[in-house]
Image: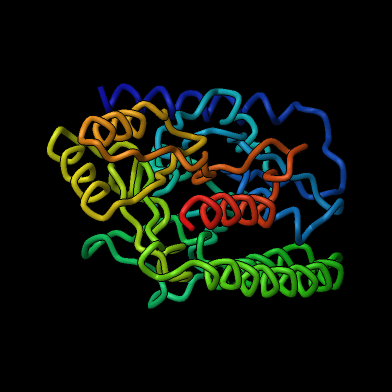
Length: 302
């Protein structure tokens, strides 16, 4: 089945590229495809209106489970630049990237300092590094340098935008630390559906626990539910959180289990983990998303 899928993907790529040879001529602006809307926001902060930026995945989309469509392949084949998160966040897209010849593909993870990345095992790292604002800042600087080297005509514009954005990220990092300084250490426990917040916990001194592993493809069973239920009841945790890109059923089952054990726990809110909100909402940008998450968590765990 894997061989058939690979051959079909090759056919789609060949057919799409052939069709695009007769497509209408694009404007002089760079055409940049970003995998997730978190990545797309990073690109937009640098290029502004000087390039066209399209996100393959929109609000509420889980990149761990995302399947590439024929429309996606067409967009990727037409792109001047493709920007991805890296570290296998977009696991099912890697075969597509491998088949795209002569394409400039920028991985934001290449801009992160290796010793700052959280290792899962000898070969893999946690891909959710955007939850540490300082690591994301390094990735932004790297992305900016890559874009400036490609689009030299707009390099000064990109550099100025990057400087302004870096200042905003520094302010955001300080602001997040301020919010948690108001929460006593023993209450700084963040419990979510899957393990997307480890960088956030390490950066801002929260203990992070989850039902599933790094990927939403990870399996979990009754033992995992019992383990988390025991932790919540024994430590008298009062709020746990669902995620916008994952079904809330598993966390709701944990709440029911705790309530049956005479420990009242509530859902403290819905957090943005692997995707931003809609573009017209306060959570439609990276900074807006992190502010919303931080306010939601800090308020619920106090």
